[in-house]
Length: 413
Image (cartoon, rainbow, N blue to C red; front, side, top):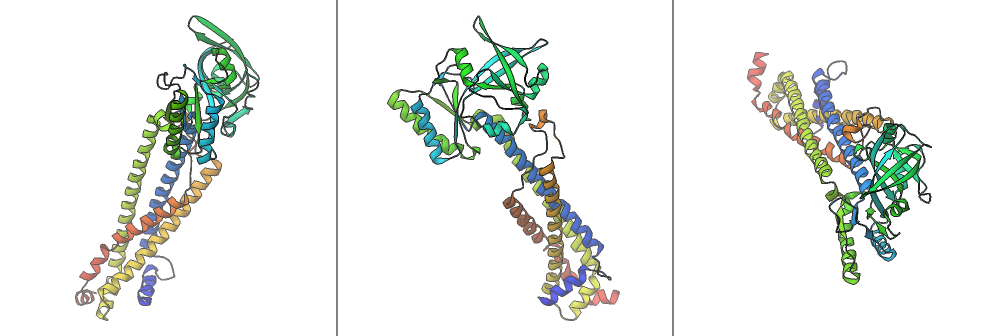
């Protein structure tokens, strides 16, 4: 083995201790392929996590509402007693301590300023809402004090359309049959989530304000959301809450409808699942490119060293030993390319993660920058997969060595 390793090192370098041009070219080709694979994975994982997190936090991992409502409509109130809410909360938090239960009301309103008007969805929330989530998207001002019913958190996009800002007021009109109720709101904060599906329509206020407008009691809400940090546990949470609600139905006759975040936003999650197929396609293509690069490099090295191969055979070296030399060379090139590719991907990914230099159109991509998630397990698995697949492919070109005839080659030389 020591002889093969020594020969491999000698064949990789030319006089003067420099790597042979073909080795440098093959290493660069593999490095570019690996860096593209890793960056694609970083971006797709970041994109999926960013979109999933926004949907999960906005909508809730589980939504509970009155079964008499049409799908995704919350005009018929759900009566939630303190005992029912406490049981839902305790069961959820016993499994997932981060679980957050929030009552909400969605109410359509027409908001008007001196110069224009616009339809918005007033999203009434109670004290259980996720303050940290909204704070990270706060552009100006502060979150509303829910004890003060007329304070409003408005999206920057709606504010720009209306020509208003923090400290301004406007009128909101609620239509109920032939009756119109008017309320005056004060804007205390602006947010920009980058998720246009919500930024175009949503304004946050106190749930008590909307309960008063609708004439509902404090136990009546449009629905409840149970929110976890990740939607991955949605199915398990659904099963637990289904048992809780079914038990309350049999004991007290309470009726509930329940949806997971995936059911509520099926189109978004189906689209996100398609991204996995795209990543697999990119991974496959880049592995093919890396394989072709290494095969070409090994073939060129074999052709360059045909005389040395013939001499080694004439001296009694076996084909398997000589093939091992070129496999070691290929492994060296492959490892060199993988390491360089990892460095390139981590540097570019790290810079984008911390400085967000590459922007995106939020109206198209639901965020204003290219998201990056560097998952070390994914990094390790990808590197191992690339190395194993490409290294196995190297067995093909080394078969050429068996066809080298010492007598013919040395006579020709």
